[in-house]
Amino acid sequence: ESEWLLLRDRFVREDQNEWKKAPGNVNLEHFASSCPVDMFAQGPLYDIVGNVWQHTANPMYPYSGYRVQPYYDDFSLPTFDGRHMSMKGGAWISTGNEASRDARFAFRRHFYQFIGIRYIEPMSDDEVDREPFKAVNVGLDPEVEATTHFAFAKSVCGVPNVNTQMAEIALSAFRTHASADVASSAQRALDLYCGAGRITFELTSTFNEVVGSDFTSRKLMPAFAMKERGDTSYVARTLPVDGAPTERTMVEAKSYPWAATYERATFFQADPSNMHAHMTNFDLIVAFNVLENTHSPHLVPAHLLSRLNVGGILVVGSSFVWGEVCNVDVAHSPLYAPDADHLQVLRDLLVADGAAEEVSTDVSSVVAAFPDSLSTGSVRNIKVTAFKKLK
Image (spheres, helix red, strand yellow):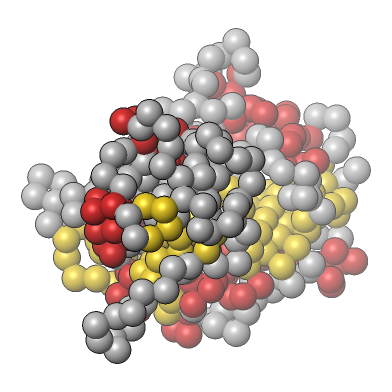
């Protein structure tokens, strides 16, 4: 990437907003396709800008001072994984900022693009070491670091890891109450608002396929790393007032009971009130910490039930403490009334028409600590219930 910048600054100079006419096959100014490589000279070279993107030798990495943009939080950060290569220069169809000097885009090598390579004879035999790039995202996003800490730490603020407890409760309810044919096959399970994927991975010991889903792909990055490499890492931060990173923590699949099955997990970004069409036919659905973090919680239970196989089990764990994203207008649902019996309203949403029946769980509540940092967090009581789909 640095070599490309040197060539561009030396031989192209002007940026996209300064062009009277594009100096190469870019911005759709000359052709609506690629063209022969010797049509647009830029100094002694050709196609520094335009025609096809240029694949650089280095993986994507953050510049010093990088911060996550809250309104586009999953654009760059997921590419800082050592597997997405930096591409520069734009192609014939690249317009706007894509054709500019400082545009930074990255794709996995299998992803189809109008892209090529430029041979440059190095002054040494050193190759780009891709290993350091696998962890360049560690410490960049405190929210993702907290999500990973919440998933894999043995305890948070002295409270035992609630994810393992919820997985055990869900599996016990499934073994006890699912229809015999469903329980014997145990084909598919769904873990919603899965974050770094701890519950998802725990369920792989029982199910042939487990789908983990979250609202943003950014929070799925640790889960993807675990599935693809068998490990993930994070930096748990100290109190926000100083923000100093502590030692990097490595988490490895081989340290857990699901070491032999974690590759059964698959992850998708999705809205739990409007999931993708392929997210269906599940034997078990775990909805932990979902309702309080959904924009329309009253729409979620019936939607989840529609994606569950008859005889399957839906496990819900919620504090019913509504997050900032929730549209908690009482006019929409009695679920939001300050004095509501939340579990009863949930029963009414699922059981009233005979579509499901409530079944017992090993425990009716668990305590969860949601970390704000390494040493601080919010402790909440999570009410747990389960339902069996009847029709």
